[in-house]
Amino acid sequence: MTLGQIIALFMGSVFVQNFIFSRFLGLCPYVGVSKDTPSAMGMGFAVVFVMTTASAVTWILYRYILIPFDLTYLKIVAFILVIASFVQFVEMFLKKTFPALHRSLGIYLPLITTNCAVLGVAFLNITQFESESYGFAKSTLQGFFAGIGFMLAMLIMSGIREKLEYAEIPEPMKGLAIVFVTAGLISIAFLGFSGFKL
Amino acid sequence: MAREEKNNTGYLRELTKGFIRENPIFILCLGLCPTLAVSNLVENAFGMGIAFFFVLLCSNITISLVQKLIPDEVRIPCFIVIIASFFTVASLLMQWFIPDVYARMSLYINLIVVNCIILGRAEAFASKNSVFRSVLDAIGMGIGFTASLFIISAIREVTGFGTFLGFRLIPENIKPVTIMILAPGAFFTIGFLMALFNLIRIKKGKVSK
Image 1 (cartoon, each protein chain N blue to C red):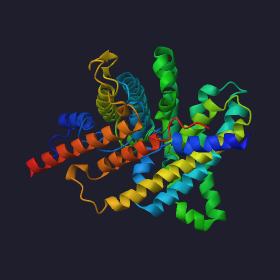
Image 2 (tube, rainbow over the protein chains, first blue to last red; image 1 turned 180 degrees about the vertical axis):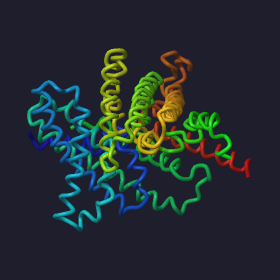
Image 3 (tube, rainbow over the protein chains, first blue to last red; image 1 turned 135 degrees about the horizontal axis):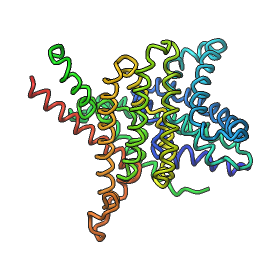
Image 4 (tube, chains in turn orange, blue; image 1 turned 90 degrees about the vertical axis):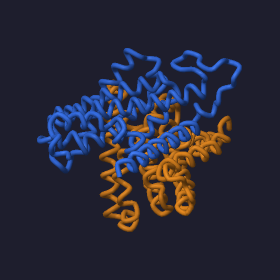
């Protein structure tokens, strides 16, 4: 795997096909937790961590268990169970070994189980890199970069929403309506990256 | 008020609450990812709506039947497994009956499993209510979801492609607004529709006061 491929993966998952602005994955936590910057940061770190590790785990599961035993039609059930139990395991591990980190990520970790971005990246990995060489490394990297892209989107939005608190917004637009229009505007900016090839 | 109209009207309210009052997309703001991703064509929206409806109905029935058997601590994993099994059935059926729609949006159909509406209804409603009420709830929520998806996709397809279900509505020489079928169009459409729903609620609230 060359450096060029890694950079291409990075640009692709963070900017060109950002999980929120172009693939629409993980929108519920995105609008739910982006009210202020510290919680957006916490959620972002938790997502980066879980997406990276879940990509690695689900890829191994798919390649070495589901394919040899011809069980690929069970991939959804298998993935969601693995992710759910994995998140639980990560929570217990963090609680024991890094209590400070656990305190800051604590409430966001259980929410990630139902974050469709995590399951989404697992599916993208197995469809894109199923038969490629270095599939494992590419899947893990894609999970990591997609998590970074998610965190970037969270940080941009939380910064804007902190300012929106003081803006004069028409009554019906208050709440999530203005958040979606803002997300649309950011998404136009991210469209500028489309067609970007490395 | 609720006590007198317990029986018949109570059931009717259970059915209709998903349409506007507790519309899953515009009011509860759940299940947004598939909504935005598949709403660029009316055809896709229908495919998604049907799959969603099937999974929601089956999982609501099953969960309300087994609610007494599930221990409280592990209820979420149990719900997810039930939903995932019905989803597998739905996806196999879709691959057979509408293969081209399935191929176009297989990623988002797979994500029905973690759709917060289905899990939310399981947690908030089906695990506490009788089978009949859960069926009504599923039908109401399913119709509310599909109708919202239909509205969003109709707006986006007509403005973005100039067609509706493949039929041309706007003449060829008028250029369609391509941005409406791209990602920003989805955000704008749902943002303004949410504002519209809020406006209706504010107006209604003023009248009843």
